[in-house]
Picture: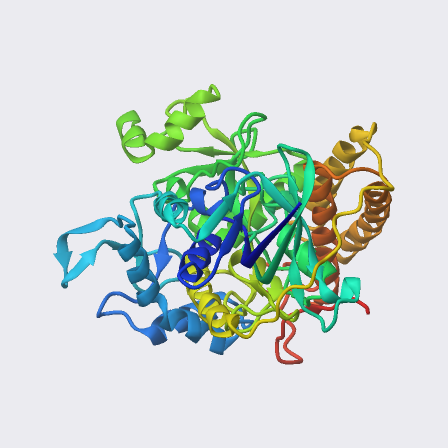
Length: 532
């Protein structure tokens, strides 16, 4: 079955919903979601959106803070482009109906409450309580569902992009995608004059992650197979404290627990952060994550403890009611006992190389949000710049697509998905085993602290897994697990290769073999290109 649209948007977070809404006034848009429309990283974003909204703040200050956090690898033009468009992006969300937290009373005439997060020199984070992502996702979802020019396809997983070169259909261009309708177990063809990847990150490539289950690097892997350069994949941000429990998925223990006196402890009850930094538990996120990782590897631990129980019960329940309630579900009383925690993969700073309009190297294909590499984040993402990037780049891509829509070529008829040479698998255990092996060796060898030997070990393993998965993929009908595993092993290979190429420690990439930044040459991003 073939669907035809002007624009195919793959992903339904802040980027995908925003670009779909801004294109729908001029185009027929198909919006694909792997699961329910709102399930994705945006829904779980607690913080907010960084933007210069206070008269005491400035564009220059926001730019400088971002560049400093990026450890010398930010693209200054990209940073300025995104930061300068922060206010208009926030205003667009307000016009859509997002209910940001108000300032009571107004401070300096500012209508909304602004908070401050790590790396920012001013209060510039506009938020909706501590659930900004949910407020954005729910508001934009309602607008998308109500728009007559947007067709929503939930439980539809993109398998691969369709390109003209692949089928000898003229000059190279993205023509759409093959998509698995998961409920019906059938593959559909979506033809489109433009395609937008808004697929988010790839946290599920690691054993522990704050990301939802849908974060399997689909967009990066599809773009790589289509011929797009991929940049800076060695820079993966880890959150220091994610709840460790066999039934707990993707639940972060906020850094505010440490800010209010929480202490990190080993199983014998001893504190350890003072050995790594004079600021102890109040050290920056990357230092705390590396310290926990070091102790876990040194002692062979699965987790460490975060203890706030020495504070009065009323204080704990008043400051951390959500954390207390969630831990209680798992039999943990945080007023009486410590919380088992582990660092978790949180944000992918690299991705598909794009320009200021979200255009990739393949004509007709755009990438926006976490899946893209714009140069904004450099070697380390500053807090709350990610939602800002989603909104700014969605607007930029929609403007560029609208500009070229009338002159875009019609999509030639492309072949249907071919399943004549495959059968149903009777070896699903292979997929489950490979998935588990991949995530474990990525955590052990390509995690927070790296060495050349570990990376080389991971490289050998990922090549064996990739060959096995490709062979499996070529013989059996596709399933959700197989598609995601194929994408994850590709993303893992890109992360490992990028990390091996960087012979220094910079930002989020820390290696014991090269513990200092390389001062012998100007810093530059790691860009990988697929051999032709």
